[in-house]
Image (cartoon, rainbow over all chains, first blue to last red; front, side, top):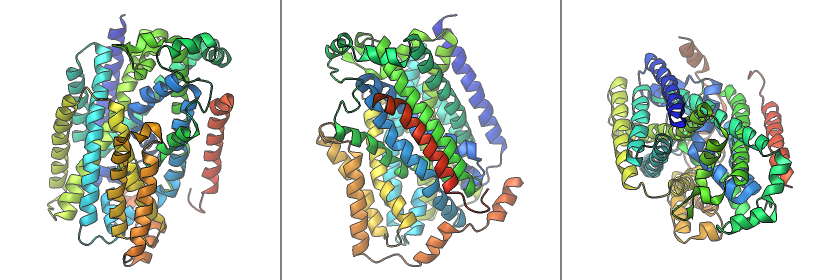
Amino acid sequence: MSAQAATLIAFVAYLVVVGAVVVWAMLRRTRDLGDFFLGGRRMNEWVVALSAVASGRSSWLVVGLSGYAYMFGVAAVWAALGYIVVEMFQFVLLGKRLRRYTHNRNIITVPAFLSERLGDRRKILIWASSLVITFLFFLYVSAQMVGGGKAVSGAFGVSLTVGVLVTAAIVGVYTVLGGFVAVSLTDVVQACFMIVALVVLPVVAVFKAGGVGALLAKLASDEHLKLFAQYGIKYNPVDVFCFGVVTALGMLGIGLGSPGNPHILVRYMSIRRTAFLRKCMLVGTIWNVVMAWGAIFAGLAARFFVSPAEISVDGHLDRELAFSALARMHLGPVLLGLVTAAVIAAVMSTVDSQLLVISSCITEDIGRRALGRGGGGRRLVFVARLVVGILVVCALLTGLAARGSSVFNFVLVAWSGLGAAFGPIVILALYWRRLSWQGALASIVVGPFVTLFWKGMGWSKSVIYELVPAFGAAFCAALVVSLLTKPPADVEKHMQDMLKEKMQRKTEKEASE
Amino acid sequence: MVYVLLFVVPCLIICAAVVFYYVTSEEGED
């Protein structure tokens, strides 16, 4: 069997599983937007844990992090450490309060949470947060469409345009039809495919290299270092600070993006019982650790086996090709097919979640809350599905227009912009009574501005990753402006709603129906 | 240091998660 045929079979198997999940999700009742965007808050702990971590990572984990390890060696661990630790605490410290509050007040989106918590009567905050999320996520989704297109095109030998069309068609169909339930359940399927890719491949490759000791010894040898230096890679792969302590700290700063990315936060809001978030934390952290170290070992093994010449295109080294080059070298056709499907699955698990968040911003936050356009629950669900469909087409066209640009540049800018805009105020809204809507607005403006300015000045490479200064500036802006403005009214009632669960019995009764 | 990052750090994170799981339990939660 040829490699391409095996890949096709594995991909079709993946689509069959996804299709079955979507049909199952469609059989569940979708009465209102809460059902469509949060699965009626009936998700179990395994689904929330795996969908939160899988949708947070995208193909950055599989090909991006392994590419870092190929380029920088062991120092790539710094890129993983930050987000793993932040998300470990986030599940419990942010997740519990967010779930209780949004459940008690029947809120289904992050902008609506901020607006309600901070007494945003003029609807300025809900407009600003919805527009910023929509804009940055639209960039993110368009870039991911290209990422998915590249994976499909590389696997099946079709053009990039066809690859992007296939990605958009698959994600569009199951997101429109199945909503949050289908998206979360497919995330679990996708997380399982990613486990195959990031456990099997590194284990096989490190074993063939003669073990970790032999692998590291070769990477540190003069001959090997000289070979890579010819291609401009002068980093010593066994030096854990090969790019300096400041850059390592900047890589840790990637984790600051997690509290501000709404597609991760809504997962916590969807869980059936708040108490389950502790177990989610445990499952999610173990998955995060196994996947990250799998990607790093895959990158190190790629540096052992794959010469820079093999992954250079037109004389330019593309480190993100290292993972697939290693897979082609060491896996049989069937496993190679599964690994390729995993890369595509990794892209789709993020795109679908983000499409739903954008649709929720447009339908629930702008349409229903800001403009007061209502209607029956089912009518709104129809509008939400329509918005997802339109978004898929728009993101597809944008992705095709920008297909020459680097996927990960867009992804990292969007991740930073959202993390800086919303991370500080989500944390402060949950823990600081004094935060005002004006303070939150300042963070939403300052965060993305500093991100783009820092990136534009080229300081991301020469000084530190843009999210670190942007998060700090947005945090300070929120603090200072809040202290200079009037505090929100009835703050104690809001804080109580974060600490106590009302309507618990009703929810359990609904869940058992 | 290389081996610490490759093997000790992931084990420490998982241990920390287990400890955090027990530390954050509330009465009657489970």
